[in-house]
Length: 381
Image (tube, rainbow, N blue to C red; front, top):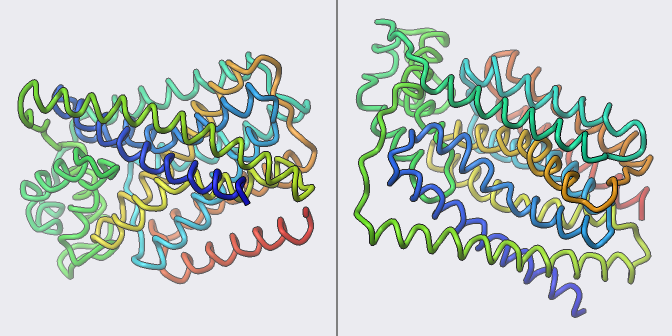
């Protein structure tokens, strides 16, 4: 019974620590006048993935490779099936041109690449360095794209209801300390045309996409909010968040291993279920809150960005610091990693066929996750 309490406490501390960490990092970045879009696509996405990093490193150092791979693969499946599905079921999610051209292809490519790298049965430090390199390249591409000027089409202005107003909204959402992704600028452009994923009668879907793209990339830098006192408070949030994430990860791994031992199940299964769902709590909260607020594009930006960084940065860094190569079991390789890759490709297909995920498709994604979870419980316990 104590092990379950430790797991619950660890998850709670991870969630609180992740929130403080993202809040502090976002506040510091805003005070330093870093672009809100860059903050959202980098700081917030990476920050919401730090629970996975803490759990991964702790598990690797303790010699539980199943928790390392199970947590990352399970978390990405949770992100792209369960959380994306719930968000789309609440409100259809519209994607933007940058995500179609960069983020969605990358999330599919890195999922397939991880499967190929794992074919040898383990992940060694050179593979971790490769993943980290891809992560750096992807982040550079995000920053360069954010700084690239986009021309505003007249039809875009009429469809968006005035882009100058939406820019301020997007910037504020992106720089907020609630863990929201800076892609709120996308939603502002599309939302003014009749809500997430909708356009008005004067402009077609492409006009709305152009307006969203322009609103996002032209967001001005936010003015400094306060002076040294505010900076010190945000820095304190940042340090407290890091400390809590590390503490929560230690409790979570300890409790999860004890539960797995008591139930006679593998650490892989615990990583794919309890730990994966628990460490996805920041993404879950951020995505649902953003969707309810009518900012559905924050949800997809947060989920896709976190799913990419989970593999390239979180798993990459874990593999580099692990004292020995991280073993990948046959079940994880030929079942769970294939499921993750197929799900990543499925999400790309869903967005390319209409540039949105509808409510019905969201319910389908949730149903697929429940089927996968049922398989894990029935066939692997």
